[in-house]
Image (cartoon, rainbow, N blue to C red; front, side, top):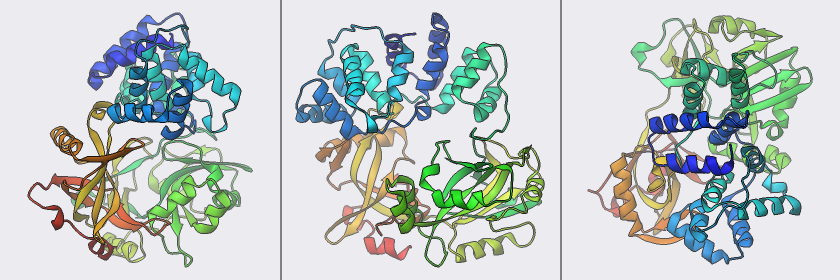
Amino acid sequence: MTWENMSRMLQATDQLTPTQQISRISRDLETFTTEKSSPSLVLQILDKDKLEANNLGLAKAKKWIAKIFDVFDDEIDGLMYAHDDLGEAIYHLDSSAEKQRNFSVQYVHRLLNMNCGKIDSNEFEMIEESILAMSANARRWFIRYMLRTPRNGINEGTVAKIIAKYYRKKQTDVKKDLNFNSVQVVCQYYEGGQSPPCNLTYGKFVKPMLAKEVPMNKWPTDFVVDYKYDGNRYQIHIDGNKTIIFNRKGKIVTQQFPDVVELVQAYDIENAILDGEIYPILENGAPAPHKQMGTRVHSKNVQEAMERVKVKWVIFDCLMLNNETVMDLSYTERLEKMKDLPNQAHRITEGDIMAFYHEAINEGFEGIIVKDASQPYQSGKRSVFWAKYKPPQINLDVVILSAKYGEGKRSNVFGTYELGVRANNGYHSVGWCGTGFSDSDLINLTNTLRRNVESFDNGRFFVSPVVVLEVKADLVSRDANNDIGLRFPRCIRIRDDKFVADINTLEDVERLE
């Protein structure tokens, strides 16, 4: 399969429903038989989150494009203002471009995974020559995937369904196989008429089991209750003197946590795959606001980040220990296996659950997770067997300060909105919101805000403060710079009945800390 063919397929499926996309792409894959590995590579590209980090941001990409096409930055900004998508902007910059070379998918896959943060002149020339030799449509989709923003709505779940349809497998089997293996490995085994091994091994990421909000009357009677920590979920693999730390999405982030690596290396074990949380702490050991995790996760100066933000690692589950796979055991049995490990989550196996909940809140933690003690570890599933319980959510009236276009089916409307409250004769940003909106809400908001755009910068439309929203959030927290904001805000409704003067103030938000 060529990149030209794949680009045509992407364009043809761009406005289809997910079901239509799955049927069309799986059908198109059937026609590409000249390159045996093509289906695997196509599917790897479609699952954009599995592409390697290439350290290419929008600002750098725009400078590259201006240089490649010998145009001024203002011209690129103007096209971006009109289309809010660099790939679409480049298409309209030179929509008559005729392809000169028929690049293979293998070649483009290599370009997409190139580390643009360390790119040398020879590699830049390779990208420049490739872009100039592509058709306009091929350029459009190449740029979109280089930026990891294809906006076609194709995600990990869609790719799993395409694999199931193309290889004529049950979706449940495909999802299970993808929990333990990459798209490439799964496709290779399917093409050979076999099923891939679903074994736990060092360095092979396993999708985590996830908690779900469950009514109290459906909580298990045979329970284990853990504190709910306000940090980030991580999976740590240990094998002798080797350690790998994966984030929730399976990306290796070991280099950001040398202090945690040192800690787990002291464990008296042969090997293990551990599931847990890393959360920020204050000098006294109490939990710090979640926003401080950003310093540890995103800082380029790891040593400085370690000094600024101390963290703690807690274990709340074990998938493998000393060469024994234990994830199929009950939670009670898994706890017994890992009882001698340090850094255990604070938990109870009997007693008053709500008293334990209030203890967690008083200690500064987020809440509790009520787990069914009889159940195995269900990789990749958001399960009722792990019930999360947190304090009641807060409601605020806010104003929209800026907006960005969405992705996939939201690519033609604003999909995320910057929220603000009144402060010092102006407004204070308290975060971004992209959930809770109906399709009609998004259309109406986009039409209103387009008429009130004041400026544009880097994909962001700054608007006059005219639209009031009622939002719900989990809590109020501060980041490492002491900026206050809302945790996981969701829109409840558009408040056409309220004036901007009626929205909440910064003082209101601070009282909710």
